[in-house]
Image (cartoon, rainbow, N blue to C red):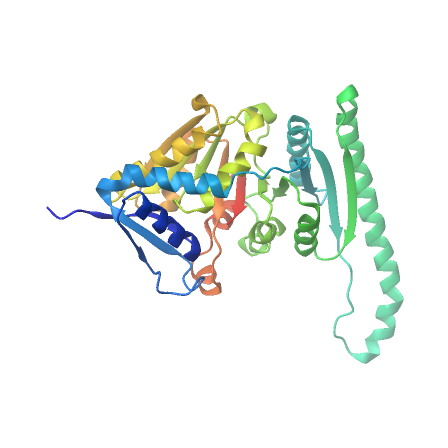
Length: 368
């Protein structure tokens, strides 16, 4: 009987070749699919294929490679930081509650950031220019005063909570920045390097046209730091109520990096990690094996009791995932967002953004 060939993992061009070499050292036959294409030419990456009978041994080699790649170097630990962009709305207030509680658990510095619009002279008839300039200074002052007032109220609210911590007070800082919100948040995040960015999102009753331009969605798309999106309709009952985080995996190399980050920012919360994957009936048996392998990798960073896995058999990814979240009582849904080309973005919106606008469950999103 002919040996069945299966895909072990999908990696970048260089990593796929490294893994192939490591497999050959262990006597495991393998070959690459899409390896003839230059790096970045295909969004799905290079497939590493093996004989199904070698799966268990190959998983050990893959896990070893990923563990070495993401092992922390011997360097001074970076103090945890949480970035909280706010617009002083009801949904950003809810995000502020979560950010404060999370920062308290991590003993992290909390940076409250607000970006207010900086008027730019737009194209207009020459005759209107003088009147526009007369009103510009007044408008700028009004926007700045409004931003300062909102920040003062937000800081007063957070400091009141902080005072209750007594001698264990958090370090709370603030920044007011002129500009376009999503651009300035992403730019500041690169400089500040937070452990996580926590933001609120509008409720699902908002118009689709408004949602597509959501600041949170844009930050989620471009930020190198993990983004925790808090839906307006989410009923927050305290940080201890976040008990089950489900990491939705598609078995790509970005999952291993996400595990490293989750170990730092989520494990202190005492959250149970559930590795979940949506699979069709035709591939469920093979996916179950790979899911078990990822679960075992998670166990190296979490207590065994706090790691589980769940295979979702459904032909429609979104319907399967939505049903799973509601039926299993998932408190936080997590993804790794893949880099996508322009055409694929237009044809098929990425998972994280699509779920952001159709969910009352908080999302923790990583960028690959």
